[in-house]
Image (cartoon, rainbow, N blue to C red; front, top):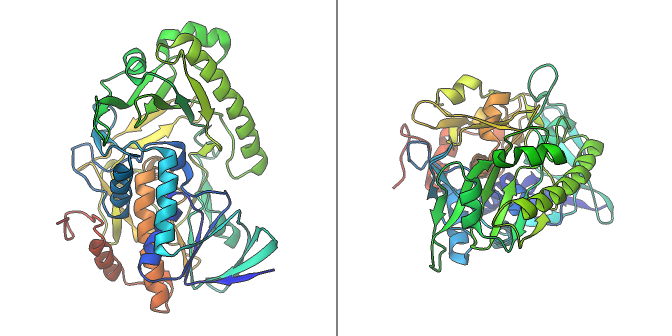
Length: 450
């Protein structure tokens, strides 16, 4: 058994963990990032858009490390920037999933982060109000990791749950969670024809960094035109099925419409069953698109390598973001950043997407307290599993908010370890000052972007 130690331990290498690890390392911390998969980047590697940087009123509220990643992706040809859209949100930020993985792997290496791939934490040892050590399985067997401050960026709140932090799952007493899906990546397609056939509003159009004709990079629609065929073939459980498309290429497109219902993403048996079912479902959907939808006739499809879990655990933090906080666009004194993507809930009974716009000025604050469990002082929980109600989670679960939370968690943990204190004891004003130095937008009540 090997023993590892560091200043900041980040558990989970999805977008939240990537941002946390880079941000902490840039503050001078010695950082170890544990990731169960053989790659980092999480759902962003499937090609999903980095929703959302710009509010429904057209104001950009997400900057910092999230914007830096987009800028570097544009430079390497893997993104086209923030593109205006006339649908449920005012702008979209499509990226290429493989380029995202390449870029953030490079950024982690530049920052000096030590990544341990194939590493799954199996036990959290606690001493009083602190996480004392973590036991994880990887090559060579079981190993231990100790760190003065730990960031749970697992998405499912695995570390917090192991340590005994209370949490909720899903909506109401039945704990019904949003469905699990798998993105489909299509090659050799015509996005312009697909947008004409399936787009419900005008697509978001963009020109690639090297120039050329504008291409549709994002649009959403439905399969209503093919309801009879869909019901006859049993492809989906409902008519008028919603479907979401994005791309940064003129001959490729990502399709988001598959789903399995009423499965718990924290249950290994259920998650494995979802992977099997979704892989087969993606193959059937790909065949249907090729046979019926113009623009797909010469295509071939590669399903994502893993399923995407929208909802599982949300910890009970020192503050819980409420429905009203989101729907009224509330601001908080201990903000660490803002969220501007609408509440996006895929109905547990049908997987149809339902959107609710953020109130006020179109953005709400994320309080630092939402990332702090009451039971532990050296544990920060960031990302999808942050303390939020089912409705609030519909907005916070998306990738731009996760990047914002990850950057704040990384800086907070690094500052705390450097000061030989726990993250819960950190001076929030000092954290906010450091975030502003890193060009994180904290709202009008704080120093604005230069």
